[in-house]
Length: 327
Ligand SMILES: Nc1nc2c(ncn2[C@@H]2O[C@H](COP(=O)(O)OP(=O)(O)O)[C@@H](O)[C@H]2O)c(=O)[nH]1
Ligand SMILES: [Mg+2]
Ligand SMILES: [Zn+2]
Image (cartoon, rainbow, N blue to C red; front, side, top):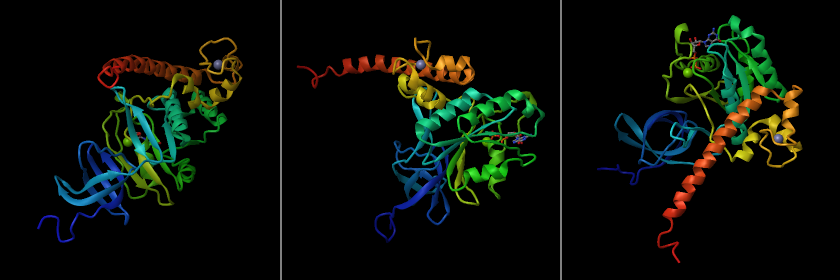
């Protein structure tokens, strides 16, 4: 008999521990994993989501996710078509990983940190591959010092020498954290050190293509032996978070949010307005010009988004002059 003898199929609580498109792995309350499909086209889940699922034989799966709980937090990005796309749900902490190779892109790091501010996540900066000779370039240390001065914990690590792995471990304890950063910086390698027994796929990259190839598209959640979870996210070439209104973009940058209190105009965008309190602090070295440049890049995107919203808003209004709006 279809449906078995228990009547309606029994809905069970679970958590998404791996997501690759519409193929997901659900962990049940006993810690067992189940390959699942998603029920219906509209259901979308990401790593960290709390879900309800049922046992069901589906193509290559033994379960079906039928519902998703409201999220406490989410980390998202703007996808190539300009819409927001959630990457990870129900996390507390973002760990931005940089390395000397591939060359550290601190503007991406700043974007992740801004995303963490907006999503109410604590944030940490990790410099991995400290064993490489390129790691001792003074420029790198100066950038780390900038983050430290902003009260972001910074941790220097190495997969080779295992330097910093213990302090990274204690920073992660009892929290749900996501590792983010350019492809090839060593996120999966760090997970393999921190979570004994797992084998996160480490991408072997040739020196010739140091940018790292974008091969992983799945994300996965691992349990830390001392408590807490760690989520490996696929590497990115570029990252931009969904942005607030232009006047609020500075809230993603701690030093600009603080300095902005003293600007002459309350809605100052720190773009050369008279009485701006930010620029003098940049000139005297109290605010990093590189951080200001990162802010201005995001501000530019936010302004473009606002422009687009305004123009589509107008079309929407026109479309709405249907019966409901006609006098
Ligand atoms: N020298 C050195 N190489 C590392 C370190 N961590 C990772 N790698 C190498 O960097 C490459 C990319 O690592 P992977 O963990 O896949 O990076 P991911 O793309 O951020 O997940 C691999 O060849 C790793 O062996 C490190 O601390 N030192
Ligand atoms: Mg990886
Ligand atoms: Zn200003």
